Length: 194
Image (tube, rainbow, N blue to C red):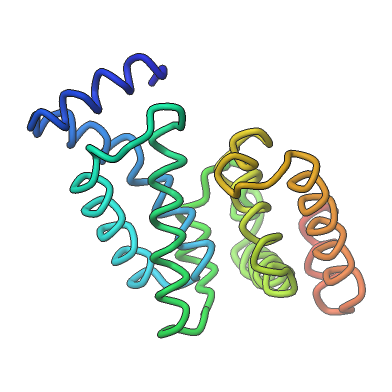
């Protein structure tokens, strides 16, 4: 949706057009759920956060600043809700559920790879993600899973693009180190790429 289309849709939603509100939900629900699931690793928590984020965004749509994208605003609301939820729930990653919501078609569970290899690779990725700082994990997920450009991540995270690039670079390095220094995980990763 272009910015002008988005603006018209927001204005319609503010005026009480339920169809416009439904359009926003349909347009962003899957990506927001995938993002929150990757961040918290718990489907029930991710679902609650997404639902609450939409309720808050649509209830406060009259406060939306048109200089930002709606998705950026919505993801910011969800992130704040996630931070609050973290105080109640410790992250627990379910690789199969998280992988099912992955935006990419390059999953290790491709038809040519048997399920044991796929399960091992997912476990290795989950382990590597857990070694990252909160910011690094979030940037890795936004960039690689949701295909957000650096400029949008920078706007969303309220940091310079160079800082986002640094976090992305360091996060990748840390994941690579975690995967290569752990003998069993290194073997799982090599299974996928061999």
